[in-house]
Image (cartoon, rainbow, N blue to C red; front, top):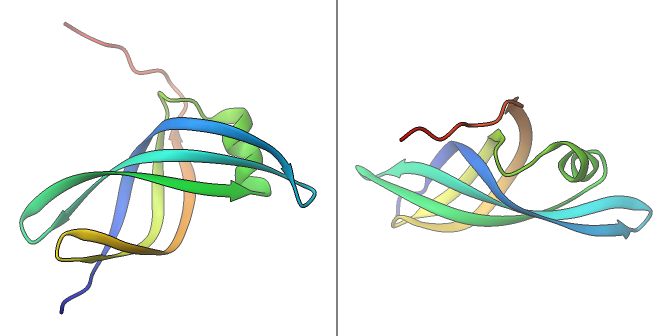
Amino acid sequence: MDVNKCILTGTVVRIRDRGIIAGEKACEFVLALRFDTEKRTDCLHIPIFARGSIGEQCAHELDVERRVAVLGEINVRRGRLQRIEAISLRVESARKKTKRN
C-alpha cells in the first residue's frame, strides 16, 4: 500500500487556550488543511496540541484569519489521514483577510 507524504498549507480555524501544562504554556488548535493525493483534493480539520514556544506563539499571536504553513510530513493512506509524522508551524501573513462580494 502506497503512503503519500505531503507538505501542507492550512488555515487556523480554532484555538483553545489550555493554560499551563508541565510549566509550559499550552494550547490546542485546529487546522483546516488541503492536500492532494491520487488526483483528489481533500480538506481535513486536524486538531494539534502544542506547548512550549509554539504554544506561546499560537495563544498570543495567531487568530482565525491568519495563514500558517505546515512544515512536515503526514502519512496518507487511501486518501485518509493515518498519522502526523512531524509538524511545525510558521506564520505566513499577519494581515486580515477581507471579504469581497
